[in-house]
Length: 235
Ligand code: OAD
Image (tube, rainbow, N blue to C red; front, top):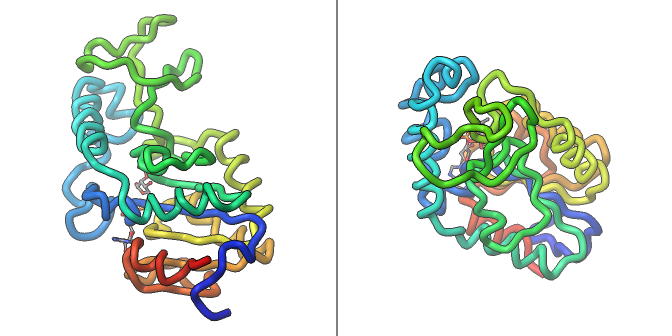
């Protein structure tokens, strides 16, 4: 199939996005040069054990990330996807990003596989809600008085089942699956391109680098997100 694709030739489109998409908004990716994990020990900042040992330290780390994410602006790639979502009857974004930039660009149907830095939850109810502002010490659950934690997926956490179901439902129904800026390093999210392939969707990967999932895609664009999207999808 030659590029560019006409998005309106497809009934249901899923964009599957990762940190590479928000790199164009100035946010660091997780892996590779300048990434979050090569310079941050996740065992101290991004797992439940660390949170139980030192919630204030874990909160400080996440508040710093949140400040950076809040200061970032949606990129032209976020805007391109949002524009398409407005002009096409069925576009779902399944993202691993926690920064909320898809929504700020205007997307409404967004499945956040790894949660959101803008919400908190408590194990006593597990119901996420918007984060109350204030210093880390003010983040106590009104129900049980325990620490509220960021509503994001840390190492060792399970994904929320209803979120996972929403993602797989959208992908099972899609006929075009576009992956942008993900290294395919983290399960179970990395299994989703295989699902798209099994249901017969046309699959496209936009990433300047090859990934362990590259062989699963029908089409590849070895470009950054914005030029890649422009080259890949044109009505
Ligand atoms: P990674 O940091 O693992 O991968 C980022 C990908 O984006 C790489 O494949 C890069 O080649 C690509 N990339 C970099 N710049 C790009 C650009 N301008 N345009 C397009 N692509 C670009 O990030 P994720 O795959 O999102 O999970 O990581 C998956 C999960 O691992 C994250 O959600 C996070 C992390 O641990 C949790 O925190 C639970």
